[in-house]
Length: 508
Image (cartoon, rainbow, N blue to C red; front, side, top):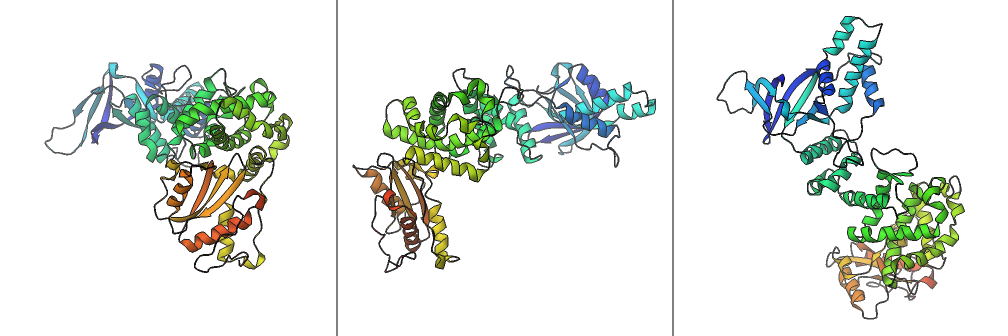
């Protein structure tokens, strides 16, 4: 039994004890396996914490020993421990009271069968303190007083009683996201795999990025499939980096634009096929030789993931064998960006910034969707610089890159408010041309539905922008008309005027 003295309090139906333990007591508990961290490993995938970093707790040891001391060596933050067994603590209050207060002072008795304590927060501090004790004990220069000062150093403890493993993991996530501003990538992946029903409640802490839960599952699918070009190439938390080429966090980040356009089940099913197509073309750049190339590193992966939604949308439009279609779609890209392009230290190293990566994606799109024609946009007239019409021009230009487009289907229109004004661009994979339009009476959704329901509809993907009124829609449509090369536009007549308003770019 462990006996401590402190405060018992009730916080939202959970019992918490505030107490202290000396470094020597913590050392004894660790040696007897009475304190442990729930570490994630491949063979123990239900864990939720990283392996403790020796460098981190060595810094704490140096601090406690006074090696980096500037002021008094204080560690006032409480270490948080959890006893998973409910009713594990016998609490004897210092005095009996009929008060309705939920806070009491007394003796905390913890039964051996309820142990171990699980470290929710503070595992590096515990190990740092113990290392400082061991250093002092083995040092020939420190006297007994110095050893006693470290061994009796009091450490604040917060002991929670009765959290199960999922709830304990959730508390770990909350502490690390709301207080320390650390991205707990490991915990997110474990919550998704083991405790998804609990993990979804953490969307608030992820600030709208709950898609990362699903992206971790996609990462696992690719990383653990022996037939995948990604097999054992993604460094999961706790893995050694040797032989692997991208961290799980970076891989997940590259999928953000994919989740903006596609559903989880579609990504899960077709992304592996897409990468099989890539590996069949760029054979030299994947597998055992992957470390010599940048195709599967962050800059290459993000570029191919930008391209994936469009490749999938075209695949659907073509129909038939998806793997063969992916290979056919990517063939023009391969001919332009041969394996020599992806050699580490080669031309691909010029595309590491976000801006340059978008340029590379647009070039790839031009080769696979536009027969190699990169869209050369027109330039705004100098007389319009600094005016609202220049803003309209630049806003229209942002709509044109195909990497922003969505599948042109009725369910994609549900988020557009009825009655909203705006402009739109439609694109046909088969005819490789664009159609530019606007909502005539301020109902963009109705206008797009007309196109979707057209029995002879030829367009596959689209993009749009809302406007404050019909006048702004007119200016944006005019800008799009002048921005596009005319051989890429299906509608070649100049947009009609609105209430006699002329085109601000040509006065027509």
